[in-house]
Length: 91
Image 1 (cartoon, rainbow, N blue to C red):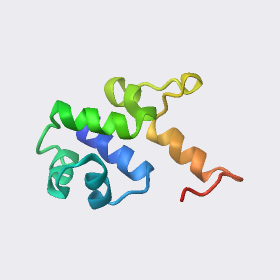
Image 2: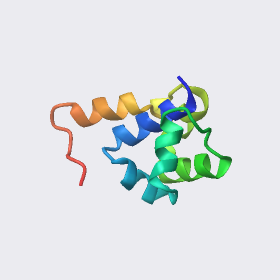
Image 3: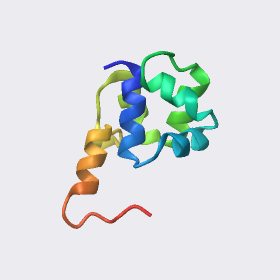
Image 4: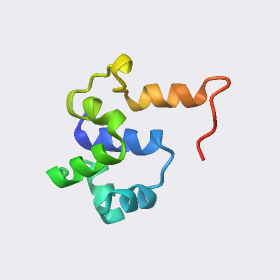
């Protein structure tokens, strides 16, 4: 999975549109689209912004691995948590 696919996974797990995601990390929506499509690689400043906004994904974003016991999860784990019975709805 390339880095753009990982960025998309994070955005979708958080339930954000490209515009909302871009606003949160301070970049244009078109930049998010190009990164997700693999047309551009994200600059280090973008990766830093993503990991600061959603630190729970930082380890997965860089390694492809998760360590839930240490608070390092993947978007798949987040989606499963949100979809599980009794999960609180995000506001």
